[in-house]
Length: 260
Image 1 (cartoon, rainbow, N blue to C red):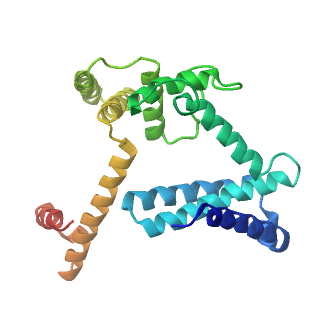
Image 2 (spheres, rainbow, N blue to C red):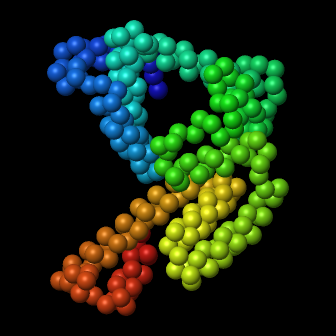
Image 3 (cartoon, rainbow, N blue to C red):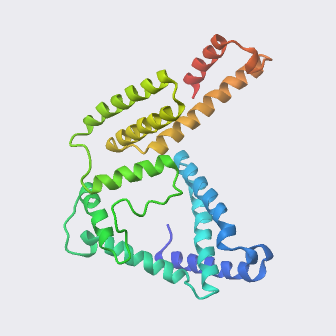
Protein backbone atom coordinates (compact mmCIF):
# COMPACT_ATOMS: atom_id res chain seq x y z
CA UNK A 1 0.00 0.00 0.00
CA UNK A 2 1.05 3.59 -0.60
CA UNK A 3 2.18 6.01 2.08
CA UNK A 4 0.05 9.02 3.04
CA UNK A 5 2.46 11.26 1.14
CA UNK A 6 2.15 9.09 -1.99
CA UNK A 7 -1.64 9.16 -1.72
CA UNK A 8 -1.65 12.96 -1.51
CA UNK A 9 0.74 13.15 -4.45
CA UNK A 10 -1.55 10.91 -6.51
CA UNK A 11 -4.57 13.13 -5.75
CA UNK A 12 -2.54 16.22 -6.67
CA UNK A 13 -1.60 14.51 -9.93
CA UNK A 14 -5.31 13.89 -10.66
CA UNK A 15 -6.10 17.57 -10.08
CA UNK A 16 -3.28 18.55 -12.45
CA UNK A 17 -4.54 16.18 -15.16
CA UNK A 18 -8.08 17.54 -14.70
CA UNK A 19 -6.82 21.10 -15.14
CA UNK A 20 -4.97 20.09 -18.32
CA UNK A 21 -7.99 18.33 -19.79
CA UNK A 22 -10.35 21.19 -19.03
CA UNK A 23 -7.97 23.61 -20.70
CA UNK A 24 -6.73 21.60 -23.68
CA UNK A 25 -9.31 18.93 -24.60
CA UNK A 26 -12.27 20.13 -26.73
CA UNK A 27 -14.60 17.46 -25.30
CA UNK A 28 -13.69 18.04 -21.66
CA UNK A 29 -13.87 21.80 -22.14
CA UNK A 30 -17.50 21.55 -23.34
CA UNK A 31 -18.85 19.55 -20.38
CA UNK A 32 -21.31 20.97 -17.89
CA UNK A 33 -23.09 19.67 -14.79
CA UNK A 34 -26.03 18.63 -16.95
CA UNK A 35 -23.99 16.93 -19.66
CA UNK A 36 -22.08 14.85 -17.10
CA UNK A 37 -25.10 13.88 -15.00
CA UNK A 38 -26.19 10.78 -16.93
CA UNK A 39 -22.60 9.55 -17.22
CA UNK A 40 -22.25 9.91 -13.44
CA UNK A 41 -25.32 7.73 -12.90
CA UNK A 42 -23.93 5.08 -15.28
CA UNK A 43 -20.51 5.12 -13.61
CA UNK A 44 -22.15 4.64 -10.20
CA UNK A 45 -24.07 1.61 -11.43
CA UNK A 46 -20.91 0.17 -12.98
CA UNK A 47 -19.20 0.52 -9.60
CA UNK A 48 -22.04 -1.25 -7.81
CA UNK A 49 -21.89 -4.08 -10.37
CA UNK A 50 -18.17 -4.52 -9.74
CA UNK A 51 -18.80 -4.58 -5.99
CA UNK A 52 -21.43 -7.31 -6.35
CA UNK A 53 -18.94 -9.37 -8.38
CA UNK A 54 -16.26 -8.73 -5.72
CA UNK A 55 -13.83 -7.95 -8.54
CA UNK A 56 -11.20 -5.83 -6.78
CA UNK A 57 -9.42 -4.77 -9.97
CA UNK A 58 -12.72 -3.66 -11.50
CA UNK A 59 -13.78 -1.91 -8.26
CA UNK A 60 -10.50 0.04 -8.30
CA UNK A 61 -11.09 1.06 -11.91
CA UNK A 62 -14.71 2.10 -11.35
CA UNK A 63 -13.82 4.05 -8.20
CA UNK A 64 -11.44 6.02 -10.38
CA UNK A 65 -14.21 6.80 -12.84
CA UNK A 66 -16.50 8.01 -10.03
CA UNK A 67 -13.67 10.08 -8.52
CA UNK A 68 -13.06 11.66 -11.92
CA UNK A 69 -16.64 12.91 -11.95
CA UNK A 70 -16.33 14.40 -8.46
CA UNK A 71 -13.16 16.26 -9.45
CA UNK A 72 -14.75 17.26 -12.77
CA UNK A 73 -17.80 18.86 -11.14
CA UNK A 74 -15.61 20.70 -8.65
CA UNK A 75 -13.38 22.00 -11.46
CA UNK A 76 -16.37 23.29 -13.44
CA UNK A 77 -17.74 25.04 -10.35
CA UNK A 78 -14.37 26.61 -9.54
CA UNK A 79 -14.29 28.32 -12.94
CA UNK A 80 -17.17 30.58 -11.85
CA UNK A 81 -15.98 30.87 -8.23
CA UNK A 82 -18.89 28.84 -6.84
CA UNK A 83 -16.80 26.20 -5.05
CA UNK A 84 -13.73 24.04 -5.62
CA UNK A 85 -12.45 20.62 -4.55
CA UNK A 86 -11.16 22.02 -1.24
CA UNK A 87 -14.70 23.20 -0.39
CA UNK A 88 -16.04 19.74 -1.25
CA UNK A 89 -13.50 18.02 1.00
CA UNK A 90 -13.83 20.48 3.88
CA UNK A 91 -17.63 20.40 3.91
CA UNK A 92 -17.52 16.61 3.89
CA UNK A 93 -15.03 16.54 6.79
CA UNK A 94 -17.11 19.02 8.78
CA UNK A 95 -20.22 16.89 8.24
CA UNK A 96 -18.48 13.65 9.20
CA UNK A 97 -17.06 15.18 12.37
CA UNK A 98 -20.45 16.62 13.36
CA UNK A 99 -22.24 13.31 12.67
CA UNK A 100 -19.75 11.27 14.70
CA UNK A 101 -19.93 12.78 18.19
CA UNK A 102 -18.96 9.35 19.56
CA UNK A 103 -15.58 9.82 17.84
CA UNK A 104 -15.08 13.60 18.03
CA UNK A 105 -17.36 14.48 20.96
CA UNK A 106 -18.48 13.18 24.33
CA UNK A 107 -21.27 10.77 23.26
CA UNK A 108 -20.68 7.09 24.00
CA UNK A 109 -21.53 4.56 21.27
CA UNK A 110 -19.56 1.35 20.95
CA UNK A 111 -21.86 -0.67 18.67
CA UNK A 112 -23.24 -0.18 15.17
CA UNK A 113 -26.81 -0.07 16.49
CA UNK A 114 -25.92 2.58 19.05
CA UNK A 115 -24.43 4.75 16.31
CA UNK A 116 -27.46 4.26 14.03
CA UNK A 117 -29.91 5.27 16.75
CA UNK A 118 -28.35 8.73 17.05
CA UNK A 119 -27.67 9.25 13.34
CA UNK A 120 -30.98 10.85 12.30
CA UNK A 121 -31.20 12.92 15.48
CA UNK A 122 -27.75 14.34 14.81
CA UNK A 123 -28.70 15.10 11.19
CA UNK A 124 -31.81 16.99 12.36
CA UNK A 125 -29.55 19.23 14.47
CA UNK A 126 -27.39 20.23 11.52
CA UNK A 127 -27.56 23.80 10.34
CA UNK A 128 -29.53 23.66 7.12
CA UNK A 129 -30.11 19.96 7.71
CA UNK A 130 -33.23 17.88 7.20
CA UNK A 131 -36.28 19.34 8.95
CA UNK A 132 -38.19 16.05 9.13
CA UNK A 133 -37.13 12.43 9.59
CA UNK A 134 -37.93 11.44 5.99
CA UNK A 135 -36.51 14.58 4.39
CA UNK A 136 -33.33 14.22 2.42
CA UNK A 137 -34.30 11.02 0.60
CA UNK A 138 -33.60 11.79 -3.09
CA UNK A 139 -36.72 11.63 -5.23
CA UNK A 140 -34.73 10.06 -8.06
CA UNK A 141 -33.61 7.04 -6.02
CA UNK A 142 -34.70 3.70 -7.47
CA UNK A 143 -37.92 2.64 -5.72
CA UNK A 144 -36.34 -0.45 -4.14
CA UNK A 145 -33.54 1.56 -2.55
CA UNK A 146 -35.90 4.39 -1.60
CA UNK A 147 -38.23 2.01 0.27
CA UNK A 148 -35.29 0.65 2.28
CA UNK A 149 -34.09 4.17 3.12
CA UNK A 150 -37.59 5.26 4.19
CA UNK A 151 -37.91 2.30 6.52
CA UNK A 152 -34.43 2.71 7.93
CA UNK A 153 -35.01 6.39 8.70
CA UNK A 154 -38.32 5.55 10.38
CA UNK A 155 -36.49 2.93 12.47
CA UNK A 156 -33.98 5.52 13.65
CA UNK A 157 -36.92 7.58 14.92
CA UNK A 158 -38.19 4.58 16.91
CA UNK A 159 -40.94 3.54 14.46
CA UNK A 160 -40.28 -0.18 14.04
CA UNK A 161 -41.38 -3.66 15.06
CA UNK A 162 -40.60 -4.68 18.63
CA UNK A 163 -39.51 -8.11 17.38
CA UNK A 164 -38.40 -8.63 13.80
CA UNK A 165 -40.38 -11.87 13.53
CA UNK A 166 -43.56 -9.77 13.68
CA UNK A 167 -42.93 -8.57 10.14
CA UNK A 168 -43.97 -11.95 8.71
CA UNK A 169 -47.57 -11.43 9.84
CA UNK A 170 -47.53 -8.20 7.83
CA UNK A 171 -46.08 -9.97 4.79
CA UNK A 172 -48.79 -12.65 4.97
CA UNK A 173 -51.46 -9.97 5.38
CA UNK A 174 -50.22 -8.16 2.27
CA UNK A 175 -50.11 -11.40 0.26
CA UNK A 176 -53.75 -12.02 1.20
CA UNK A 177 -54.79 -8.50 0.20
CA UNK A 178 -52.96 -8.83 -3.11
CA UNK A 179 -54.65 -12.17 -3.84
CA UNK A 180 -58.07 -10.60 -3.22
CA UNK A 181 -57.43 -7.94 -5.87
CA UNK A 182 -56.00 -10.53 -8.28
CA UNK A 183 -59.25 -12.45 -7.98
CA UNK A 184 -61.19 -9.22 -8.54
CA UNK A 185 -58.99 -8.41 -11.56
CA UNK A 186 -58.81 -4.74 -10.55
CA UNK A 187 -55.52 -3.68 -12.15
CA UNK A 188 -55.15 -0.42 -10.20
CA UNK A 189 -55.76 -2.06 -6.83
CA UNK A 190 -53.55 -5.02 -7.81
CA UNK A 191 -50.71 -2.60 -8.43
CA UNK A 192 -51.30 -0.84 -5.10
CA UNK A 193 -51.41 -4.09 -3.15
CA UNK A 194 -48.37 -5.47 -4.95
CA UNK A 195 -46.52 -2.31 -3.93
CA UNK A 196 -47.61 -2.86 -0.32
CA UNK A 197 -46.38 -6.46 -0.52
CA UNK A 198 -42.99 -5.40 -1.89
CA UNK A 199 -42.71 -2.73 0.82
CA UNK A 200 -43.38 -5.37 3.48
CA UNK A 201 -40.79 -7.75 1.98
CA UNK A 202 -38.21 -4.95 1.84
CA UNK A 203 -38.99 -4.26 5.49
CA UNK A 204 -38.35 -7.93 6.27
CA UNK A 205 -35.03 -7.74 4.41
CA UNK A 206 -34.02 -4.68 6.44
CA UNK A 207 -34.88 -6.39 9.72
CA UNK A 208 -32.71 -9.36 8.78
CA UNK A 209 -29.88 -7.06 7.61
CA UNK A 210 -30.27 -7.98 3.94
CA UNK A 211 -29.88 -5.27 1.28
CA UNK A 212 -32.83 -6.03 -1.04
CA UNK A 213 -31.28 -4.37 -4.08
CA UNK A 214 -28.14 -6.50 -3.67
CA UNK A 215 -30.24 -9.62 -3.15
CA UNK A 216 -32.35 -8.99 -6.24
CA UNK A 217 -29.32 -8.20 -8.40
CA UNK A 218 -27.64 -11.43 -7.30
CA UNK A 219 -30.78 -13.28 -8.36
CA UNK A 220 -30.79 -11.39 -11.68
CA UNK A 221 -27.19 -12.46 -12.35
CA UNK A 222 -27.96 -16.04 -11.33
CA UNK A 223 -30.94 -16.18 -13.68
CA UNK A 224 -28.84 -14.78 -16.54
CA UNK A 225 -26.15 -17.43 -16.00
CA UNK A 226 -28.69 -20.24 -15.93
CA UNK A 227 -30.70 -18.95 -18.88
CA UNK A 228 -27.50 -18.55 -20.92
CA UNK A 229 -26.68 -22.17 -20.09
CA UNK A 230 -30.15 -23.20 -21.24
CA UNK A 231 -29.77 -21.28 -24.49
CA UNK A 232 -26.30 -22.68 -25.11
CA UNK A 233 -27.44 -26.29 -24.63
CA UNK A 234 -30.38 -25.75 -26.95
CA UNK A 235 -28.01 -24.31 -29.56
CA UNK A 236 -25.74 -27.35 -29.21
CA UNK A 237 -28.76 -29.48 -30.06
CA UNK A 238 -29.37 -27.35 -33.13
CA UNK A 239 -32.61 -25.94 -31.76
CA UNK A 240 -34.02 -22.60 -30.75
CA UNK A 241 -35.62 -22.21 -27.35
CA UNK A 242 -39.03 -21.55 -28.86
CA UNK A 243 -38.81 -24.97 -30.57
CA UNK A 244 -38.50 -26.77 -27.24
CA UNK A 245 -41.27 -27.89 -24.93
CA UNK A 246 -41.50 -26.58 -21.40
CA UNK A 247 -40.56 -30.03 -20.08
CA UNK A 248 -37.40 -30.06 -22.24
CA UNK A 249 -36.46 -26.58 -21.07
CA UNK A 250 -37.15 -27.54 -17.45
CA UNK A 251 -34.76 -30.48 -17.76
CA UNK A 252 -32.00 -28.19 -19.04
CA UNK A 253 -32.87 -25.65 -16.35
CA UNK A 254 -32.31 -28.23 -13.65
CA UNK A 255 -28.94 -29.02 -15.23
CA UNK A 256 -28.13 -25.29 -15.23
CA UNK A 257 -28.85 -25.11 -11.49
CA UNK A 258 -26.11 -27.65 -10.85
CA UNK A 259 -23.67 -25.64 -12.97
CA UNK A 260 -24.33 -22.10 -11.78
